[in-house]
Length: 269
Ligand SMILES: *[C@@H]1O[C@H](CO)[C@@H](O)[C@H](O)[C@H]1NC(C)=O
Ligand SMILES: *[C@@H]1O[C@H](CO)[C@@H](O)[C@H](O)[C@H]1NC(C)=O
Ligand SMILES: *[C@@H]1O[C@H](CO)[C@@H](O)[C@H](O)[C@H]1NC(C)=O
Ligand SMILES: *[C@@H]1O[C@H](CO)[C@@H](O)[C@H](O)[C@H]1NC(C)=O
Ligand SMILES: *[C@@H]1O[C@H](CO)[C@@H](O)[C@H](O)[C@H]1NC(C)=O
Ligand SMILES: *[C@@H]1O[C@H](CO)[C@@H](O)[C@H](O)[C@H]1NC(C)=O
Image 1: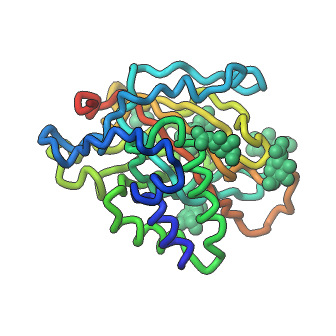
Image 2 (image 1 turned 135 degrees about the vertical axis):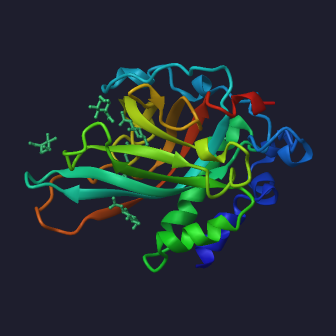
């Protein structure tokens, strides 16, 4: 539990500033001082995701990651939780979903985001098996930086296939709870690019991008048009084969989701 409290404390400006001298460069224009709505807490105009991509990001296999659909991200978040894997009858691990908690990290300078994410990962990995994701979520829900949750649902495009799932990011219960547009504060996506993590492609979840789904012409939520998964720490498919019938594996995961476009793009400042 101590490690979890540290994890949440790590999100405070104070500790970030201590951990990273460059944090003095923070653009501390807090959204709470503005009246234009519940977008990111700090300016996202300092972010350029492409600068975080190694030049050869798309050169190591996997469908390539696209360029962003907008100049600036609408939201930049930290994701802490689990990615779940099940052992299929043919002895391979298969990703069956994830449950993660999302935090606003728009106040952290771009050049420290990767190290900050790794720092949080160290707290989360050290939290011990006694700490349930629900406890993390409950504690996190009390944090001012709390944005929402990320989880998966059976694919509405392929409902009879038990292995077909799509990811959702949902800010309705947290950041957007009192927003007039709360009903659209979620997005259901389908994957696009997916490349090995440049840090450690074996253990860290692939970096990827996905796009909002439209089903029969209806946009599946308004939170974003495009979502990137980057700066992953751990969370990848367990290496090797598995024995069919063994319990599902929950792999801890700490990473960033960056959101582009969507209904809140006009709040970018
Ligand atoms: C195991 O089955 C899954 C689901 O049908 C399939 O995607 C995967 O390629 C299979 N792996 C092997 C090694 O056959
Ligand atoms: C994945 O693991 C989380 C954390 O234990 C759990 O809450 C969730 O129900 C699991 N989801 C699936 C699809 O297995
Ligand atoms: C991030 O951490 C690495 C490894 O500890 C270090 O070499 C690098 O200078 C750090 N980057 C920043 C911007 O602090
Ligand atoms: C899209 O509309 C068609 C025709 O009404 C319907 O058969 C299909 O089930 C719909 N697809 C989804 C994913 O809802
Ligand atoms: C990338 O990750 C997100 C969230 O984990 C998921 O929605 C998406 O399907 C993934 N994309 C690919 C190509 O696997
Ligand atoms: C990836 O991480 C694992 C586990 O920490 C480590 O054993 C391995 O050496 C790392 N590989 C690289 C290329 O850093």
